[in-house]
Image 1 (tube, rainbow, N blue to C red):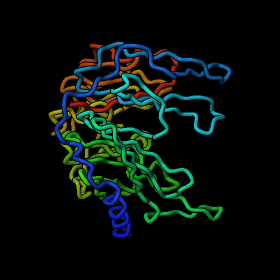
Image 2: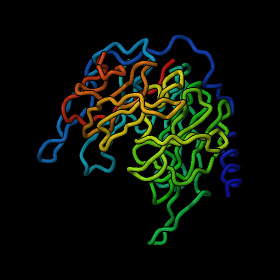
Image 3: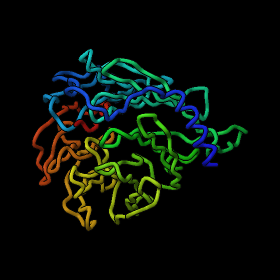
Length: 353
């Protein structure tokens, strides 16, 4: 089964991805980052269930940072077919624009974007749109999941696995997707890794990893990937090599925090998880021993928690003001995004080098 799955993907992707340069190729200075000012399209849910204009703003100069604000999602009326709107940062236009491309991941050098979406009306197929910001050219790639683990439904239909949460490796040479099982979105079927420059796919079967809020993430140098495992309340964090062999298991609480520079600090000496119910705290752990280093407050709310490393000594984290930088003593040293109370905005941060 796995051979047919991989073979079909290779045939489709090699034809589609020919002549796309290496995403890790050297580029000029990083593209401009969002400037200070109000973010468009932000909403807030009112007491009577209607939607009104919300508030969110960039309040710091984001240029020269080790992280980048790549996009954000806003909500609309639940009666709409798709109440979520994605706003992607366009460096050449110096503004955020609406897009229907689905999830977006920007390479660490800022040059390449990969937009991922499930194709409506085409079960078992996903689409990747690869865009070179330097040339402005885009190319679409279709990925077929129909051969892997289709599940029959009660009404005689079929459900297929879904690709979710695209993640660039720290060197910008690989893409990682979580593949969730049909009818069990909280459990994984495995991961799909696409190796650049030709985007050759490799599916690695890893059943039953817990992928509720977040899925598989990279370690600090792209030689391992990791995920939460077990059941809610009794989870661990497992590391796997690029062949899918489990190499270590940490007996720690919570889901890995994959925003910003990711789960592991740049040196790889520490890692972070959202470790209390409702994600009210961030726990920092020693990567060598698995022992707790510190526990820091997270201001949890209606929107998902932003949590990951900013640099070796600071976290990118949800705060009372919005999204900020916190040292390992729990002090917010700077606010990057100021978010109005109850504003329904889900910012997406990635690494930038």
